[in-house]
Image 1 (cartoon, rainbow, N blue to C red):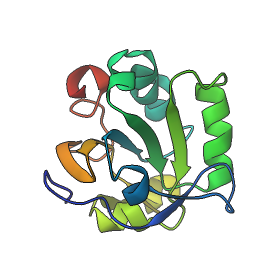
Image 2: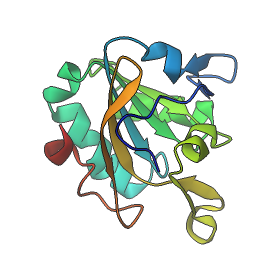
Image 3: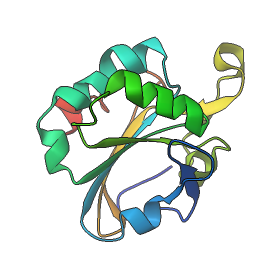
Length: 154
C-alpha cells in the first residue's frame, strides 16, 4: 500500500474528458499536494460528508494542489465536480482513474463488484511534497470516513 516516502506513480488520469490527460507525478513534482481517493463519485459517503469536509475546510487550500480521484470516467467526475464545487472556488480538481491505474499502483484497490459493479479504490487521503508522499490515511474498512476525513487528516 502507498506509504510515506513513495513517489507519485507516473500514470495518466483524466479531467473533464478522455482527451484531457493529467499526470499527477508531473503535476505534483514540486510543491505541496493533496490527493483524496474515493470509492465512487456520487455515492452517499463521498458526496454527503467526505468531499464536503474538504470543500469546507480552509486547510485544504493550504495543502497545495488538491485532487479528488475515483475509479470513474472523466465525464462522471466532471458532472460530480459541477455538483460539488460549481463555482470552482475550492481549488479541488476531480480526476477519473477509469482503468484504476493509480489505484493499483498505490495498492489501494478492493473488490467492490457486489456493491458497485467493479473493483474500486479504498477511501484515502495522501499529502505530498516535491513528488513524494509525506502523509497517508487509508480507511481500514475501505469505505468508512474516519482517518481520511478532512478534520482528522489536514
